[in-house]
Image 1 (cartoon, one colour):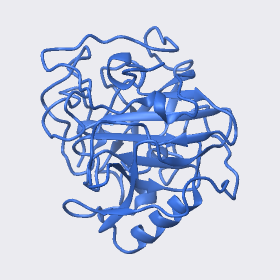
Image 2 (cartoon, helix red, strand yellow; image 1 turned 45 degrees about the vertical axis):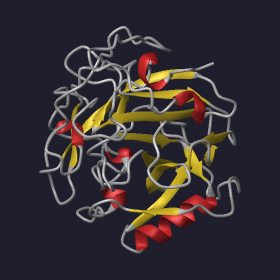
Image 3 (cartoon, helix red, strand yellow; image 1 turned 30 degrees about the vertical axis):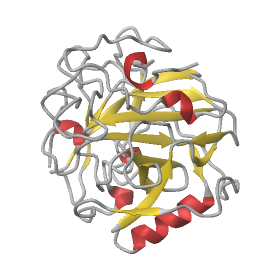
Image 4 (tube, helix red, strand yellow; image 1 turned 180 degrees about the horizontal axis):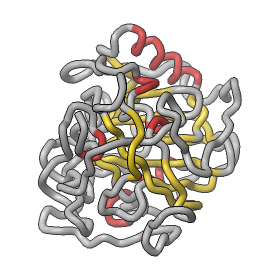
Length: 299
């Protein structure tokens, strides 16, 4: 459990698909099928960063969220059954895949991120093409938009270190940027980014793999891991109380089911003036600025 961009138990990222230089992927086909559209050979073995148990740094972005989150969203959220085995090898708060705060990140003002463009970048599709079903990040925001603020690089996660893994080197994925913050206002509603995938009947598109007081990790397949498909993590979000309650209950009951959401369902509210977002395809962190992949049909 030491490689592949840090996907738990995967031993590595998928080996086909991709549109980005250096052998990575653009997510084509990654939301619902293994082996395609993943971060092809670009994943690095190794380690991660942390605000959690490994004592690492989250760079310059560490928003303070209110102790009591605004009462937004529906009064209850459904759950859908976990496909395959639930994650039980590491407690979710200490898990390097589920809680990305354990990994940490560094601002591109302090580490090399290439040209560090704030805003869209273009990566041409390869022969696999672009996944038309990939999540649309502009639909995270209400109203929809693309308010880029700053760029960051994530740390890897070393599963061989300690009881639950720990932070190691800064990720050397081929993408120059692997996390971005977006301008938000405290209390602004944030929603599940729309995709073309359905993980359960009734139009449910994603499940909440992790929810705490200031972050959410979402997965666009039914498995309780990030090994195959798309994963979005959001830091600086105050989760909707009913969503957090549903997650806490399902987690305590053994994760045989987890909260499920429709595209556009309320996730919670922004805690402050910036909200951090990461996108993973089959365990590997991607460049969230890629207009080709994550911003299709944006305003």
